[in-house]
Image 1: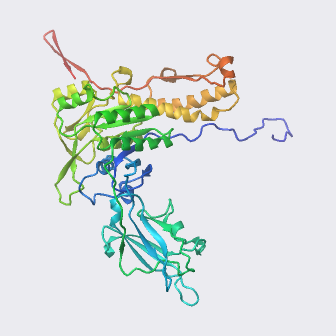
Image 2: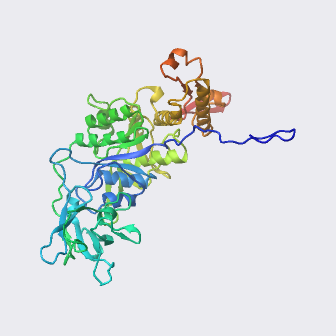
Image 3: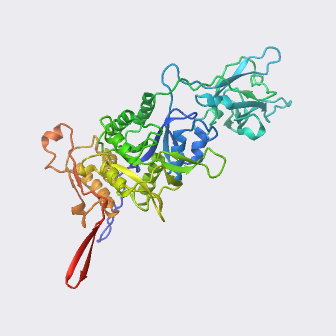
Length: 523
């Protein structure tokens, strides 16, 4: 309160409580499937290089990894970050991690002191080689107090070095320049630790520093890593359910390599159960348009869901597995499509259909099947989104339909706009939980949602020449009677006029000559 000393107008500034908190961003891509290495928990990668560091690249050509190819295409198409879920066999016959144990430096009876394990399960860990060398930390009498770990991958030559961890100690609490150099703290750090190995202290009773591992005369190979028995589709779908850790985050889900309608139906059901998942379905290989339509609409086909979209045909890319230029490979389109979704969301917004001449698949060189106009019509009517080649534009997506048979949820952009709006509005109104349920809270909710919807409308996300035509928010005594208040319920009613894409452009051309008019319709 300002001090009032003279007549006039006074301004009192104070912190006004804001209830607009951090909201989740637009949908993130998620790829789930079989990988030969990498974390087995959901992990975010922000670039292709980041993915390679954690899951490996194309160093092993056969069998080719559907997930690696999908993520490669995703970043080629403009994708930014993605959630990766590596599925593994979940029973007792699951994969094991490679390992090797090192003895300490005791002069008479060396004891096991350090076990080096591959960072995660799989045969890939058997390609890791470890060197132990002396560190540079010395005591007053020039005794070596530290050791180094040199990590090599896919060979034991100096050109195979991928990581080196210097001046480590097997003594807990040991520090160098004020920072811990206890080997497990450094190498096993979830933030700055190794991408290749994990350490285990075997608790040698030898006095430090002789409890450090002995210097190796040659590189020691990790052994015992296995891939386990064949991964089942149920294992992959179970792995996907780890997204339950992120209930408020919308995801664009792609299951590379999964082309069985029954399995994909379970994935779509999971996305529907979340409420904020959207599934990009890959077409199987070697299908003509007629067989593709039968695969989607047959008795054992895909469910008529608004939270899934199918794209056809497979796409031809330069083969990243081949060192020879000019070699191509056919891949499912899902990675490209997910990248296109994310790029379109960022450049135009979620209300823009990810299709059209601007929706070109960067990095695509050809198609498995070239569709005729009749094929395009049949595919579109079956809610299969065609991918075509357009001179001057490249390989483009020429469909924006979900699998829903209903007009109101027919289009990808409409359904994804609903997912986006519902996700954002839930996040924006969480502040209201446990607040006093009266007109003050109702007005705050109305104000917050009105501000958000007004911004969405002004960005082109809603129809209408005025805000009243684009949306409305109702939260007052008319829909919050005393009976609801006593039950702890706030009722908020929101109506939005969503944008629908112009799927068919009809031009009427009239020729006028000598008083006679001829009309021609072009679509």
